[in-house]
Length: 75
Image 1: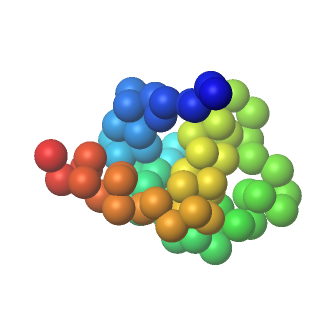
Image 2: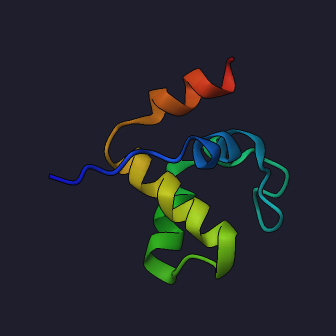
Image 3: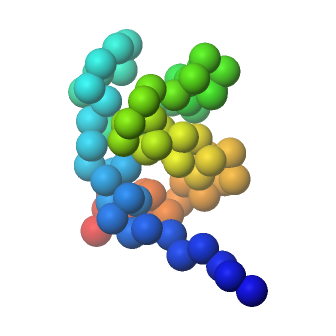
């Protein structure tokens, strides 16, 4: 059975990268409000790395795994 191992670099990036545009410009990605992520889910995530990070964050939130990011951010 093939289990996926989380990419720790990706998780670290979610706790360090800031939103580059829009209503929440300057906010660290993992601190974005869930309703903003839900809006992107409905309208479409941006292209490229930012979109991949936001989609990943959405899945983390959807599955109730926020605590992982809080632990990484507080190291």
